[in-house]
Image (tube, rainbow, N blue to C red; front, side, top):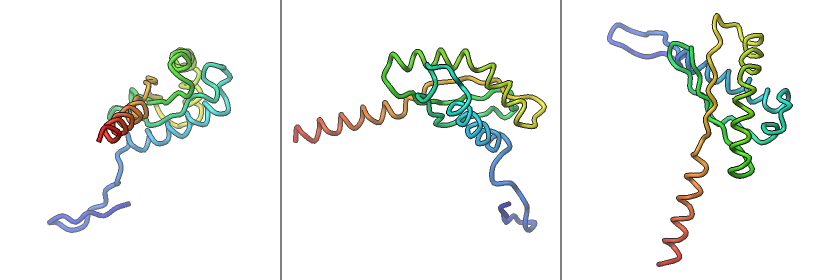
Length: 129
């Protein structure tokens, strides 16, 4: 626990909210499931969980994933993740002690694509100089 100093003295406050802790736990569990339990060839070995955001009411979780292998494999992997979402949520319900497991929404993380695009632009600018 972290301590924060206020006018009234010391206060014990967790450094992360419950939603943040649940998001970290979901990221770890779903990543393990994608590696070892999901048998769908559209998903197996191609998908990496980049980050997870959970709403404050803990009802919804956005899982941002990266897919290796190009645009066609991205589309197939996202379809496969959509089909596997129910199985993943049910498995999470057995592993995590929560009253309600968040509804899972898989979204494609565009960060790596944007980074590559920016690097290409910088290279092009550098070559023109």
